[in-house]
Length: 449
Image 1 (spheres, rainbow, N blue to C red):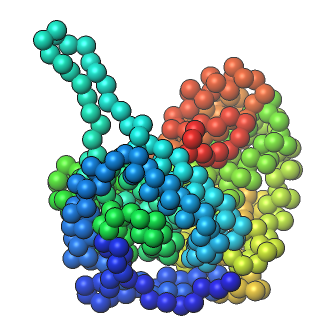
Image 2 (cartoon, rainbow, N blue to C red):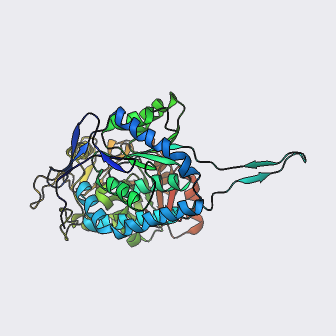
Image 3 (tube, rainbow, N blue to C red):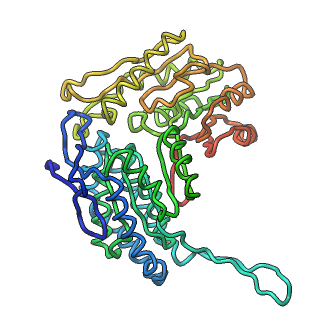
């Protein structure tokens, strides 16, 4: 299979259209640094066209029989499943991840759309106690036009998490995918049209940060859901204050993966591999801080280090590759710079710590999977989101110290704890300031959970 170089426009009202300005930008293969597609570079005029299309289709989509809305979403789920090979190939090449990882992502997207296809007939209101002469009830109503801005690390999965519930509840959507990896989102919109979703219900406008800013600033967008960096999230929050737009922001993380002295160390090694090195570490919930009790730290590293050293780097279509490149040269430079900061602040690399060159992809944006030791929680490697395949180990003397270190961060996205003591696990889970806490596992995601 192969994906030919092509020029793609926005998808608005079910039709592919060029940018009003005629401007384009390239999507680049991270393994070769070569362009794989030219995309329409959206501006405020393109965003306005998409928003007007979404607004025009809102009333009819909102008022559609809930059963029919759910049926259309299930047809889209089935279409994604039928098109899984092409979607996985688009995503793998666009992001740089191994093809088998992309295939797992497509399966999760199918599960997400299937789950939310059941929502339209199950969104209910309440009846409320009131004065005998008053009938009080609530209705759950769609907001209107939703703007969805998604990142490049899991393009189709995160788009599905935003688009499926918004559409299921009767909203219409304008989607702005990350400029680094927009191809699977465009294909999703095509599949939605083929599945019978009315024109204008789902629109995709491609472009860089200015395109997303225009979507946030648009007065006829009722809500924006954004996943991305904390810095951009702050900008969106400031911009939305001007028109009181509703926001959902899912931002960065520096998540703690805590291994206590009574943990199953072998299981914790497996968990640390998943926590840190899946998708090249380009995961917002990555367990980048490995907080280990001193009694088990050496055993933990003894199991983890050879596993990390053995990770094979390669192109998306190399069946032997376990990890691909980072998504861009800019991201690679950022990760390598943070790698270098560790020695400057008194830590050291136990494994890796440098950029990497792959013989079959010499121009790719690769870095070495890395383990840093002798680190403290005040180092940059433990304060800043790295979004790369690296874990920093922090040794602690007891569970209370582990919790204090874990909570000493400006982030609060996720955490995990490894222990054989169930009561201890639940106590620590409650003490951790994190939105999601896993116990004796890391990174479990399921739309049904």
